[in-house]
Length: 72
Image (cartoon, rainbow, N blue to C red; front, side, top):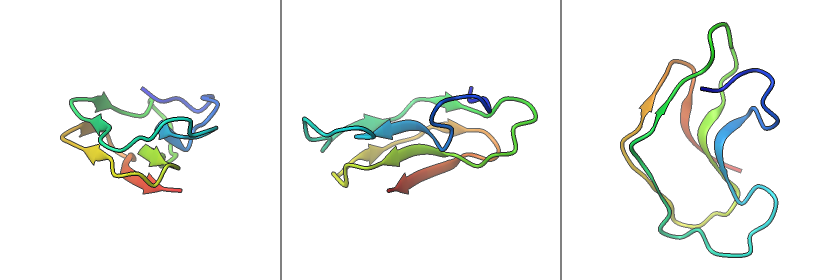
């Protein structure tokens, strides 16, 4: 669950947000159940990627308002 007061509220899972010591190629993100807290009207990315590596976004259950993926 994601709330309004989370530090990085624009992404639930953020890959290489601060540094990239190791490659993220092949990272699989699947089998998750994610949703926003009641009353949260933001539209964050479920998976936000700063690495630009080849990631594997599988089947995840995403609640209303969540965008599946975003490259930054």
